[in-house]
Image 1 (cartoon, rainbow, N blue to C red):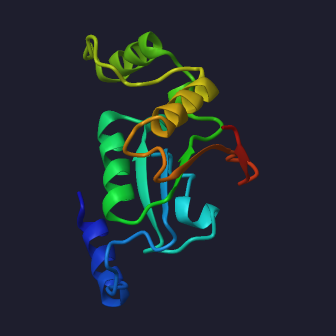
Image 2: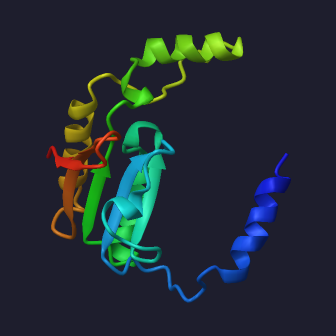
Length: 161
């Protein structure tokens, strides 16, 4: 089931860059969606080794994501944080009840009260997540935070907060 990926990895490993130290050399950390239409480094003109990348469904800030931002700021020289959800996102097309129903319909298993972190209020969520970072004592004063919406049709970012 994974043979094609392992074969591709062997080809990649022959020429993969190896001289990286783990620091975000442009001081950038990006939280974006897991959507495969998004290439976070390319969309802002960066290359491997220049930024830290996090992905979650809907580009939502979770507690683990917050921990990663704090570590990035204080251990990996991050001083610019971008939160980047995108247009036509499945995570913003349904509310929690709708997502649970969709998951149950696809799997036949009731997800119970599992929280997926989805909401049709995409921009409201973006603003709330930006505010959470901007007011956190381990982020505020150490890094600038910006919220942007990525348009999957044009490839353009628009500043939202």
